[in-house]
Amino acid sequence: METKQTTIASAVQEKWNKRPLLISGPCSAETEEQVMATATRLAATGRIDVLRAGIWKPRTRPGSFEGIGAKGLPWLAQAKKITGLPTTVEVATGKQVEDALNFEVDILWIGARTTVNPFSVQEVADALRGAKVPVLIKNPINPDLELWTGAVERVAKAGIEQIGLIHRGFSSYGNTEYRNAPMWHLAIEMKRRNPTLPLICDPSHICGRRDILQDVAQTAVDLDFDGLMLESHIDPDNAWSDAKQQVTPERLAEILAAITWRFEDSTEKEFVTALASMREQINQLDDELLQLLGQRMKIADKIGEYKKNNNITILQTRRWNDILERAMLKGDKLGLSREFITKYFDAVHLESIHHQNKIMNA
Ligand code: PEP
Ligand code: MN
Image (cartoon, rainbow, N blue to C red; front, side, top):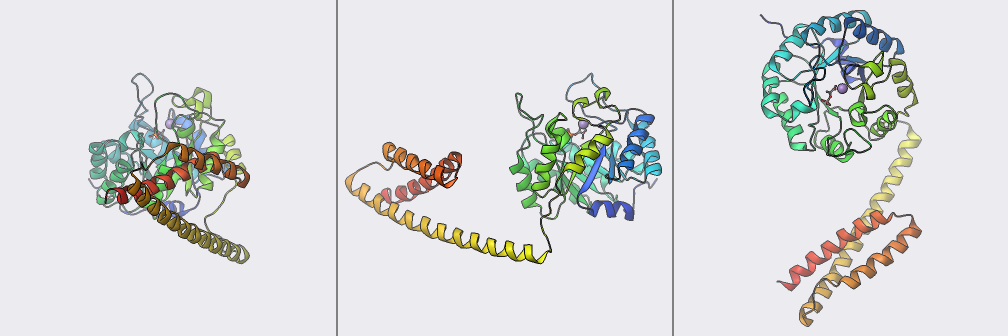
């Protein structure tokens, strides 16, 4: 039986291309009434592009709700029919891909606990072969860009053309402010490596609580993410999974309304000219800084030769402390943080040591 989607509906394609792409819905589909009520209330806000719901829930520990299973797929199909919202669910096995496509789920996503396992990702990818469906890939729970990249490659090799990334934070031992540390630099690096793939942020699983959802969402927008996935529930406190981080559809709309949307580019002429001129100044200053650093290293080389001829060690701790202390005081006056000064001087100092090492041991 050929059941796979062979084309992407133009409505789905349109949503996929929209910026910001906004996805919301419950962590888990629980009952038909809950799915329908969440979907209609979300649709009524007019702010959501895609309806999400977990059907199969990979839980870290047994004993909690592991998802309603394929029985929930007709509920999503019905919710789509009534609201017009395309749907997305998480898939972790070949059978789940098959079931989801049979019920015309529009977008699939691979969860953080699946991305860590190349066997599972390959199984999902094999089941996707020949399907025309966009696939979102969450970062693995551990901070490993190679695993994330590997999952993207496996899905791409299966012929999937619309692939997106979801940054949902990384787990770490012990409690922090977050359920999963955002480690923004990793998402930014992933975006740098894959500039054509949309990158969406999932503040719900980063935060694990409601009160900081908006801050995290705003940070993602400021970092030029392409969209957000946020969990919402008609009765968050009594949700069968992830109760603490879910908000009502109406609260979700308030959070989205309070976000300042910023865009990477503007076509406004005055802005573009002003930005270009300031960037030119930055480029010139960077060039000058590099010139000066080059000169600084030439002097370090000379000192290296002098030390070599006089049998003196490269590192002299007291001198290094003096340099740092002087720089901190200057930095304070110039509005440069002590953390930056320390990092910067560490890097410059290391480069000096490399230079002098080469000379001493030539
Ligand atoms: C989810 O989206 O509900 C989920 C289980 O997410 P993650 O895979 O990021 O933990
Ligand atoms: Mn969840």
